[in-house]
Image 1: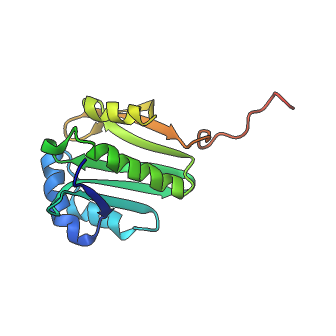
Image 2: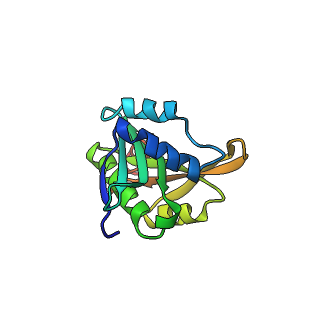
Length: 167
């Protein structure tokens, strides 16, 4: 990942991010309004970053929603010609670090069932499949695999202490 730097996404980045979003996800790209809405909640419950090359061009972006001990990876995208260089891993690391800073007990995400490359990345980072959302991505109708990663030493959100052993 030589020459790539991560920084906080700003409103000025929206046009470049939207061009990349439409290129990466032509069937189910976010709208500009959706992205601006996410940025409006930054830093309160959101953390969005961009990856820039040595010339300052945006080659990737990622976003996290975090509240109440839970975090959700909202999006990750990397320019196709820069995939496989560690940019996605760097973006995901930043999101996971931010979830940890915010005290998140677990991080969730959805990934397209037909996106093997992304699923392998998430598995490398300790995400495990916990569910399936049928026909989640529209208009394609592709399923979403729901994945979760527990914080270091954490337990699943929504589960209390074990019962029965000492009671």
